[in-house]
Length: 143
Image 1 (tube, rainbow, N blue to C red):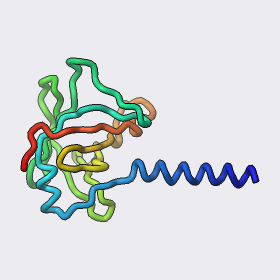
Image 2: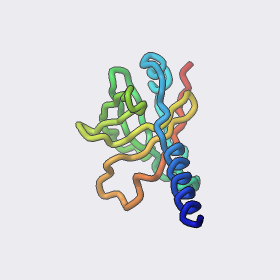
Image 3: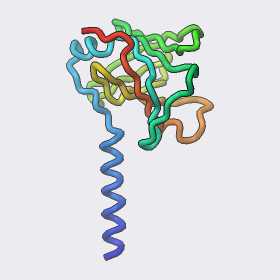
C-alpha cells in the first residue's frame, strides 16, 4: 500500500509539473504577429514559484519582436542589442528565439499583456538556470 501511495505521488507530481511548464502558444500565425510584434521588457523572474524582482537600477532584458521573423535582444543598461530571429513551431506550439542556428530563448506562453520565456542552451549559466522562467510585459501595447 505504501509503495502504491509513493508511485501515485510521483506520477501526480510529474503530471502537475508538466502542466505548469508546458508550452501554451497556440495562435494562428496572423493573430500571433498582432500580439508578439512589440517591445517586451522583463518584469520579474520566477524560480520554482518564487517571484524574484531585480534590484532598482539593475539591467533588465528587452526583446523587440519585428516582422519577418526578426528580433533584437538588449537590456536596459544601454549596451547595444543583439540581432536574433524568431520562429513559431506550430507542431510544438512554442516560439523559439534563435541566435544563429541555436535556440537561445523559448517563449512558453504569450498574450497581449504578458510573455513567459526561459533560456535555452545558456553557456556559462549556473546549474538550474534553465528552470528559471522570465515574465515580460509589453512596453507599448499595440491595439
